[in-house]
Image 1 (cartoon, rainbow, N blue to C red):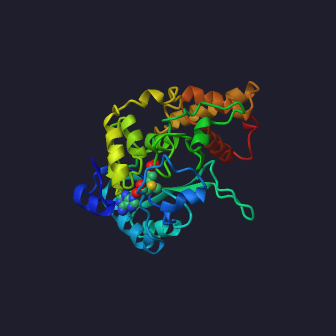
Image 2: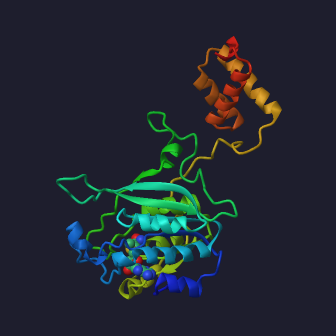
Image 3: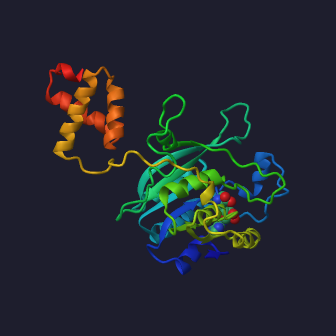
Length: 327
Ligand SMILES: C[S@@+](CC[C@H](N)C(=O)[O-])C[C@H]1O[C@@H](n2cnc3c(N)ncnc32)[C@H](O)[C@@H]1O
């Protein structure tokens, strides 16, 4: 459900405690957002009117109030991503620190529309804060976008790169299309939805704007809800959202090969440990490098490279001075 209301009052009225799986939200920045066109020197003729910002002197209390509600409605194990510029970031961090939510990541989103400045560095990043409510295991779909075995042309792991905490994602250029101020790119939203929720989960956005979070959530077959105080934006977007088919974006996701690390989180028996060590010694004696030997074992036993390396290094230490077969 979507509500044309202030999110703090609206959440209190309509959203039950511990009911939301994922919050993705992008609060107003407290930088006179209604004047952002001058700031960015851009043509705002296709931007929906009525954007509501928060006066700078109210930002601290405002952040505290909506973040308290967000904490209340999140399920134990639920995650929250907050997108923020740096001007009022401290208020958001302070409000988060006053909750029991646990900080998981402080992501830097680098974008491509930094405002040109001559006598200082050009600001071209936002902060994305990932917090979870403790009490249950948080959803984190490690292999939802890349398998461990997928490599780039330099043999770097695509899964590792996708999970680094600096995200380089460009804004979408939408000439002549009706849009909201500060519309978040679909790629950014897809990434958060894919990693931190599953189909049918409930995704909430306290500041819907163009309903970008809700559109991606529905497209990926999640349920969506949220608030937007600006009646002009709300009335426009609520019509758009009616034409979406749940799950229609699922076919646009890249197909991830089966994760070959099938045994990754399974307990390791003494027998398997001994097998790994013996196979390693055997492969080394056939002339394989340490790296190649570990990669070969990883394919066979379905365990990750780094956990195998730890097993070997522990065995090396236990038998030090290193016996010749480990070298
Ligand atoms: C930064 S924008 C969100 C942009 C959105 N993520 C998108 O991609 O379009 C913040 C939105 O919050 C709305 N807003 C401001 N105060 C609000 C409040 N108290 N409750 C709900 N919405 C509010 C603004 O009108 C604005 O549309």
